[in-house]
Length: 622
Image (cartoon, rainbow, N blue to C red; front, side, top):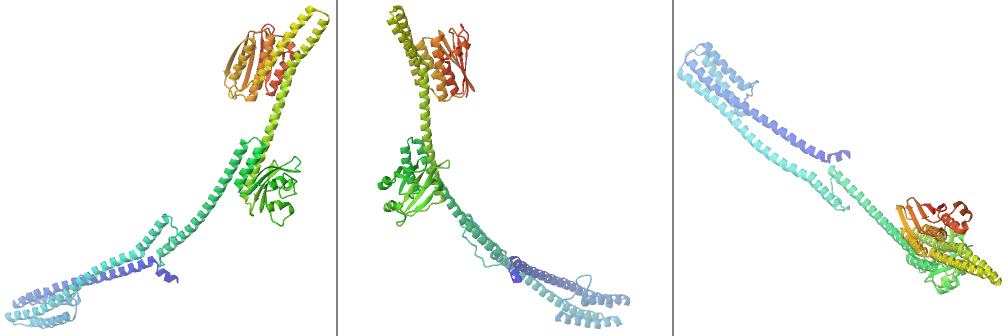
């Protein structure tokens, strides 16, 4: 089997054909050389036979001239040598007679004639010139017969050589044609098929196959090509399947992300719990393609599930299930076992599902709402037909429920922050009223009591003095109320506090008549709005102290911006003893500034010398 296959290989075919051509070429070359040698030897034999004529006439001349016998014997010996050369050939050069019947017969007659003539010319004493000439003439005729026979044989060999050369030329042309055909049949045609297959593969047609019925190298190459295209086709089809699967996965992921983004965006735009729950129910119904949705929230003890919102849920179920105990129905899973799952709804199920059966629902998907490992509620998705829950659906519903939990917690946190802010503002208002209006009212109460005593005692001078003090107290109370209103109406710019400072100084200058100046230096990060507000309140308190106690006609506010902000209020008033003021800071409101500064992590320092003015410095790090 292996030998047969080897014979059919392309290399074996070309080797066999080439070997045949080589053998034929060698045979033709050998035959041509043999014929050429025959022609060369025959030509030399013709020349040697032609010399016999000359030798015959030369010997005849010597016999006629009765030359010395030794000379005649020498010529006879030369003649004998020529005959021997013609008969045996020359080993040193191509000289031989192309023997055949004609040449053999002519040579035998020549030899017989020479034997007779040789005896006659070497032994005869009497010489007849005419007879010698006639004998020579007769002998030359035999020589001519031999030469003619050799020439005829040579002409035949020449004709045969010419014919053979023509045949060889025809064979060469035929071999070339056969070689081209074999090359086309065994090389170019399979190669063209392979090239055609490659072009189809380049165009993306992996189903192409190269048809071949040979078992040579091109057959093996075609089989390998077919195996390659088959493998590529399988890989391409597998790749297409994977690309389609990945495309479907990416599309599902895109839809999931779009749904998450839509719900997240919606949750950030709503500020009430009712709108939040109702809008969430509408969007979840559209995303999940459910027939109805219910959003339930649990109480603090997780003993009840209250319905916050519903979408397309029958009114009977909405009315009957406003409050559900955990475990009493398919809706409202116990917190310890809550998980996202599908609950089938069948007609012969427990009576707790009776309303769902009457409403025509066939399945329920329950999604717990978790926040920091605590179950806050659940989202119920109702379907009229049985449904399944994939891993992607489960992750999506859990993520949506998580976003809802965060949004509700943010609403609760915002409410707590607003409540805290209101409480802080009330505390601040109470402190301001206590430190200003309440003290003034207490002072006025004392003055009214003194006024009543003075009236009873009919002390007119004392009554006038007390009325003047009451008038001053009322003016101070009115001024304090205005300052409080100024504090509460102050608004800051998140990007720059300079405008708020200018407004504060302008109002102070308008109320007190004291000239003011603002200087800003350096660059720094803008203060947060709440910090700005507290800084303004501290500055306003410092300006209020200037108005009440400093008796100044000029106030300068210096602001140094940078990693540390420094606000300096400097007046040219009468000043005071800073050490003694610390013992009486309730009178000048210094404790109020300290408290406000502590809220924002700032430090307040006061430097003052009687007669040289006062400097209040507020420093805080951003």
